[in-house]
Image (tube, rainbow, N blue to C red; front, side):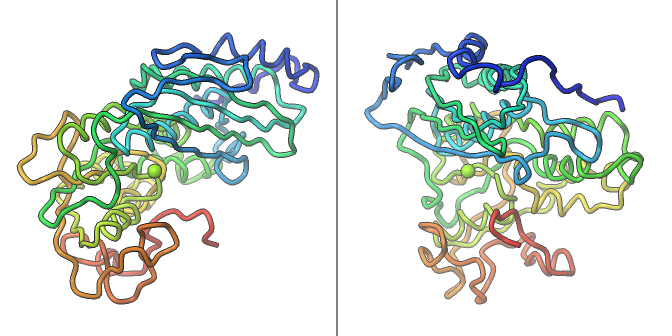
Length: 370
Ligand SMILES: [Mg+2]
């Protein structure tokens, strides 16, 4: 294997007290930033709230459910990978509201045999992600280290708005659906990680396989594009965490309209995955339309808006057909039931996902679906 990452050795967390573990953790983390009034060390951190409001989000990654430390492909999720992924999915939520990330608190639940090196790698990966993703105002200001049977990390991130917060519900009929980031790479990467060696993914060029696995292990959302889209006049926005069809459906339902995706605009994404699809007999369209965890940004802008760099139009919004969507009737606030049988909130070139694929497909990722 060219990309095998060794497991860290050395002392484990149960050989260190919590104080010593913190002493190892904090020096490798970015704990200072323009909004930190009181950093780690007290009962609470104190963070400035420029503009008078705070954007707030949280996400958990649990071993077995959200990642494996050793994948069937032979690749590991390193501490640094998990730090990057933890940062990425939270920063993307802040960006998806059109805000700039300001501070993070992290809670780690660790089995006693977790190497200390893994924990410091996590802190470093988290802080590196702030830099790499352009979240330069963001700092780690506190958190909690605890012992538990299953490895689990939770981050909570605050952000500052640069405009009014951009929600899912503001899209108008006639608006242009735009996207920034990659589509389907993390889903293809998950398949690669789950494929043992030797296996079907051996036929994929090593460089491409490595890039796709990396897209799953440490996604790179376009964090700075969120505020840029807000300034460009975005009326609705979110990050694509559960797949394009499902998340576009969330905007459509929250805004009470219909979204049609433009297949030709999605072709560059499909083409970038075609060599992998051909090699393993997979359908790149399925990765692009239903794959989650890329954490790109999906927004609706007024027609004729100037698109920020890296943003491409991928569809359009139209009035919902009567009875098609019922805002507010679903499990999540502002979301109607996607099992509503009266009509699709999202189509692809005018076709439903069933018509597009010629079969029923699961339109995206859901933690609670069997
Ligand atoms: Mg999100």
